[in-house]
Length: 222
Image (tube, rainbow, N blue to C red; front, side):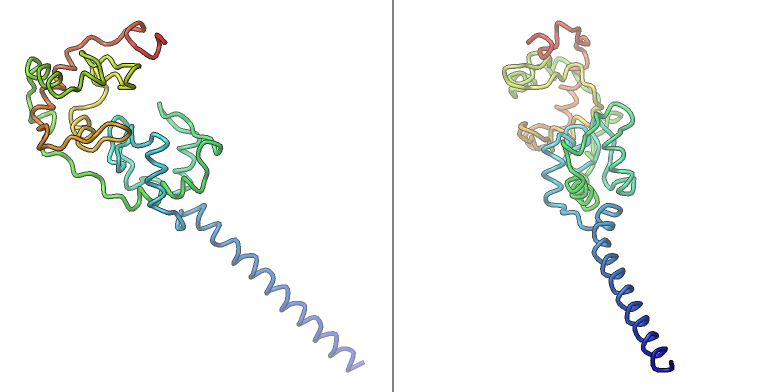
């Protein structure tokens, strides 16, 4: 009986060790997944920059998440789970993005990009420090070829794909940032090509335009 008891105890000990090892292995395998889902620690910032641009995020939030028509989101004010929830079931005017449109892995990359991104330095100009001249703004708008994409009064164009920008839906500061650091197909215009004061003049010119009616919006007339 003594030998049987010792043998049985030995088998139970071996079984316990194997069980603990198996559980540890499962937990070790799950840990990276949990880290990726909860903290986005495995996100690829370089790919995240591409994801951020290709899904149109930069058009609203700025090329580095510094804010434009939409709010500043770099660095992210939410933990990764909250970031995912906002993308999937957003509050406000932002459209929802389903997993078919952008995967959790891509969101982890975008989150990593926003965590690492250095937002564009704010312009020294501000809406409060610049006073625009509409007449001069019209001349610059024509001379610099802005009208070729956006229409003579900023009404937009289906032929060029230029967005309606008159009257502007964003602040002067946001417009200045976007012109200097654009996203999409628009080329960048440095402050050596067009100054903040000139942009303030253009902004004032566009602000003077009448808000669009349905017949004035090219996309609604296709």
